[in-house]
Image (cartoon, rainbow, N blue to C red; front, side):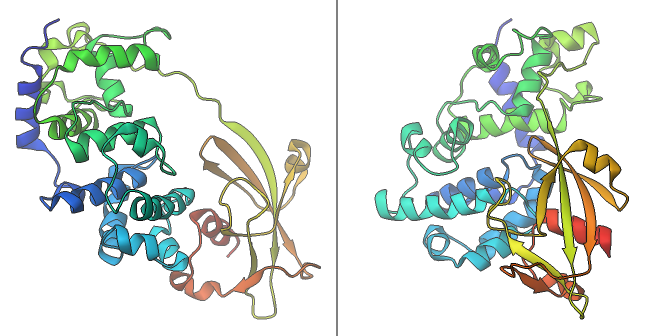
Length: 328
């Protein structure tokens, strides 16, 4: 399978069809690096359409690395509120501080330097290298994986392994427009080579695609185990009907974020629970939560009460808001 004309086909399609995303605006070099850093942190485990308004609000209120390194935690969390995975925001601020103090205010332009920063792993480092610094790298996200699986008609577990997919990236070839090219391939995956019902008649590389020739577009995935865990959330109210929350220092998820007092319970106890029960998926956890209304206040009052009549002024994770909406 030749890839001599692949970059030209893909870039031509991209120039005519790319989305107008806020982090793709033409700005100064330093501002592009900042926009790429923030957007890549936000895009970790979050879809583009969800990120757009958060990115615009965040970069308006926290416009550069210096302001990010000095921003108050309360303001940072408010700008991130609802986006989830709050450790990303904390790592982003830590990263900004290190860049200011250790790298003289400039984002490292090599993988080693980038991966030394909090919250930046192999994929994010490669994405920043490609997008911000125009390095000839194709980051392997879910969109790129899907394109490769269909182009090469990969179905077996060995074929869809990360190692094999990285080898298959040579199909795309190289171009001097590395920044645009990396985004273009992801864009094809997002807009054209979708998980279901791909729009092959608009795809610039459909003639090079084995799945298109076989008319079989089913995607095989390596199953990721989602651990099912059971909790009891205890709901305390005062005479004003305000809810009692505390900063989470007990569980590995939502560290230091406001949650209801909770305990992990057994599956049997969860099934016997007669009150309201809800399911919340978080990262690789399938959380089953039994909600228990309490008459008396907790013995250890190390938390605080919130007035849920005005949730807009509260910085609460979506996790806590879902429980509030269930019990209201």
